Image (cartoon, rainbow, N blue to C red; front, side, top):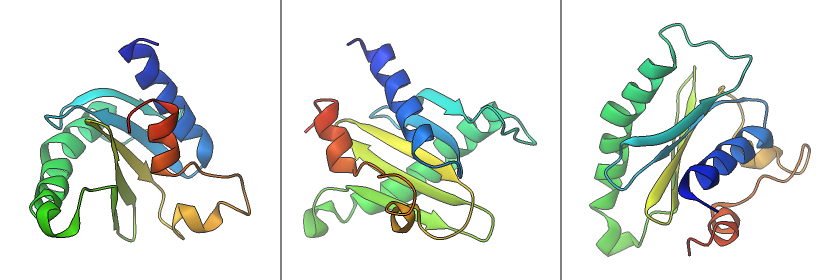
Length: 132
């Protein structure tokens, strides 16, 4: 499977896990967006490109850069999240890539997994796509 096909499959699979997910992006090792997708029925006021820029240029380097400084004491980053009253932002490490998920606020997505459908863990996604 080529890189573009793999990224497209990751995007579709993550969007399918929960209807509260509005946006998913794949960031390269340099934290720049290599692929992204928005749920079809979601329209961002400022446009998807603004969301890409906001996530890549602001949130990703701040959150992931800060957490990477603790790797020697805490170990490798698996996932990180930020919740506000308007949005939930999650980062998952996938090999050399990061998957960014922007979701509607509410209970954490993992808590609803049994009631809806099983949301794959970051480890399961890494194993499925060969990034271990």
